[in-house]
Length: 219
Ligand code: FE
Ligand code: FE
Image (cartoon, rainbow, N blue to C red):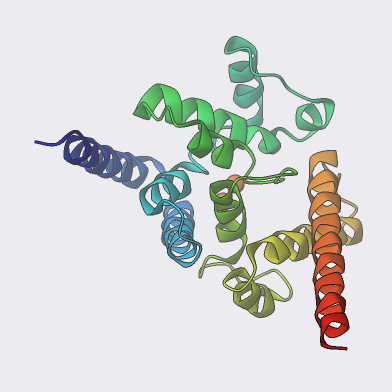
């Protein structure tokens, strides 16, 4: 058996074990959301030619630590030497990405750093995300079970056209929403928003320059 085939089988076994654990441990609404994120992440991976299996694993595990009560979450971080920022201390639900990555590694043997980072940053995003990180971040927001966010229909459409723009639109909407409910804003979300805003602006400037040089050539 070729090395690649062996790896493929091991990957399949791991996914079935992950699914069994999720079915046993997640409450029904969380399981529906998780399944939705996994399928949406796989569809986005198809669209952007990413790794479909990695998208499935990251999607399945992204919220694995979401139901851990705040006090316990903080204790676990302390025990495992996971750095906790001051905003995370005040809003411990923000830790479920970091804790989820720890679970993925320790319980399911997920060693792929791209998958682990996609789990860690799925709530806030971060500047310069990898394709997989963007896929999980966007899938978490647009999966079919979501119905509360404004502009969902539009963002779902953008997600399959331009994933960088989708990250920009989503972080912009999250920041606008948090302002209306006076929720505390994680500076990491602002950094993500600013980074993707500039990225789109620079891209548009380059495109405009290219357009102008084409017109100049024609003259
Ligand atoms: Fe989450
Ligand atoms: Fe989620």
